[in-house]
Length: 179
Image 1 (cartoon, one colour):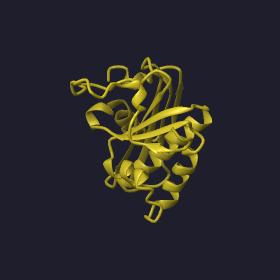
Image 2: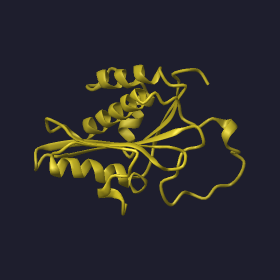
Image 3: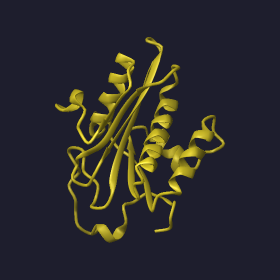
Image 4: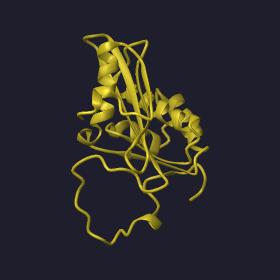
C-alpha cells in the first residue's frame, strides 16, 4: 500500500474475503501489527458544552492510551466528531504508530475524510487529518455502530459532564471498565 493512502479496507493479505463471516457483536481488535483508534465527540446545546475522546488499542485489545477532553466552546455534534478524528490521528502520530485503523460512529465525519472534503466549513481540520495520515504506512477510516464505540462514547460524555481532561497511558480508564 502506498504511504499515506486513506484506505477503506485492512489489507487483503490479512483476510480471506471468501470466507463467510458472522457480523460482529462487540468491538473487534485490529489485525496483528495494527492499532485501532476509536474516537467520539459529544455536544450539548442545553449544557453549552462539547468534548472529545480517543482510545487507542493494540491487536490484543489492550489500551495503549485513552484521552477524554472537554472543548473550550460548544460546537455542533458534527464538528466535535471531526475534531475527535483529528485528535486521534495526531495522538497516533505522536506515538509514532505506523498502521492504524480509525473508527467513529459518525458516518458524516468518516465520509468527510474519505471524500477529502477540504472545501467544507471544517475543511481545514480535514486537511490537517489528511496531512497527518501521510506519516503512516497505513491509515484506514471506518464507520462503526455506536454500539461498538461505547468506550469512546462514554469517555466523551464523561469529559463533557465533568469538564475535566484525563489521559490514561497503558491502562483502561476506570470509568469504562464495566463497558
